[in-house]
Amino acid sequence: NLAVGDGATITISGDMRVEVARELDAIRALLNASEIPADQKNELAGAVETIETEAKSEKADKAKVTSAMNILEQATKVGGGLVDFGVKLAPHVAGLAGFLL
Picture 1 (cartoon, helix red, strand yellow):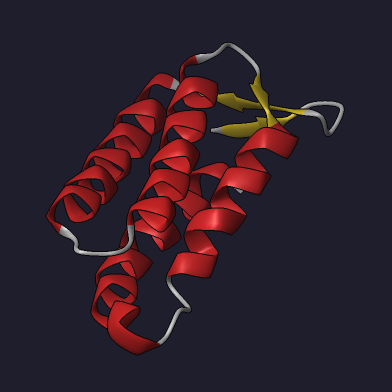
Picture 2 (cartoon, helix red, strand yellow; picture 1 turned 180 degrees about the vertical axis):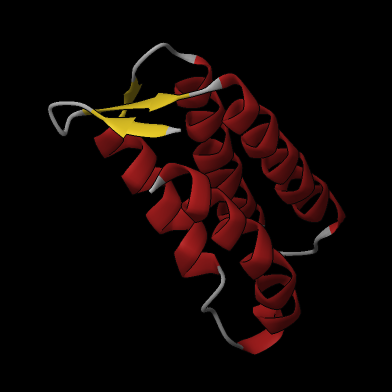
């Protein structure tokens, strides 16, 4: 279902788009309910938007998806007061990675 052509694009099928949208919605809900700093929240929301935009395109830009996924993955590894958020975020990021990377 995930076809990587010349290495620069990713083809995402209809069923996969549904799963990606489901994970992105879950991440958005976590962001909205979280008390993480605004700058981090904005960065993560931007990554979600990038993934959503690319998932809707015929040929998703692999570099953009990878960059956005890296931002989300880093948020799962933070410490301090963000541990709870990272723990909740991790399974959704892993789900996206399974579909996109």
